[in-house]
Structures are given as structure tokens and as C-alpha cells.
Image (tube, rainbow, N blue to C red; front, top):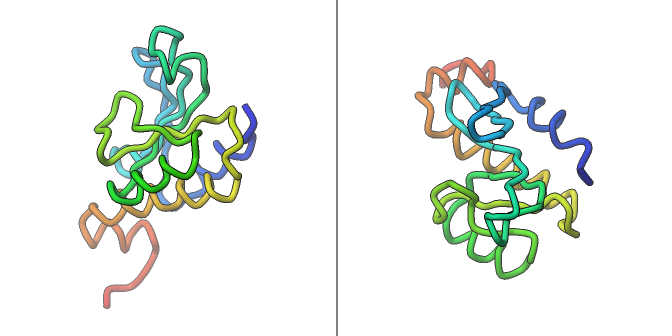
Amino acid sequence: MKYEWLDGYLLSLPGAEKDYKPEWAWFRYMIRGKLFAAVCSPEAKYRTYGGHDLVNLKCEPSRAELLRAEYPEILQGFYCDKRTWIACLLDGELPGEVLRDLCAESHRLVLEKLPKYVQREILNTKEK
């Protein structure tokens, strides 16, 4: 995989946990059980996705559309809601900084959906 730093970076995000889903052959990255990233290598039968290492990330629908137009390595989410998830191919020319930003954005989007007290606990912040 081209982005050797990816696993460490995803795990460094506040509250991140990792597990492996053998039925899907996915490494899942979650916050309190809520998925924010999944790394997998779909089989060739999955056409566009097949034969590529990829990471699925949560993304705002309008931003996802713009990203797919700008980067050929960004596709609709693999086996996820294609409106709110993107799949970033890890064997293309996607700039590392772009991938890092997308990972952080996905984490933020999922964290923001958690209850405020959980967000504060994860981010170690005091109530405002």
C-alpha cells in the first residue's frame, strides 16, 4: 500500500478504535462503534473497485461530488451509502495531504453525530 502512514493516522484520531470484520475482510475504524473509515481490498468481481486497496470515508454529499470530479482515485463509497461515503483508491496518485484531510473530515463528521457529552469525553473538553 502506498500510504503506509494511514493505519497509524486513523488510530491517532481522538477516540478511534480498530477491528477486523472477517466476513467482509475489512479493517474498520470507529468511534464508539460508529464507522468513520474502512480499509479493504475488493475482489476483481467488484469491477471498478476490484483489485484495488481502498479506504471508505464519510463525506458531505456536495463535497463528495466535487472530489470525484477532481480526483479519479475518488469513487462513490464501496458497499456504503454512495451519497455520504467515498472510496479513495490507495494505489493511485491521490496526494497524501488530501487523503489525510479526508480522513480527518470523516472522523469529524462521525464525532459530531455523537451525543455532546461523548464528544466532550473523547476530546477531553469542559462543558461550555
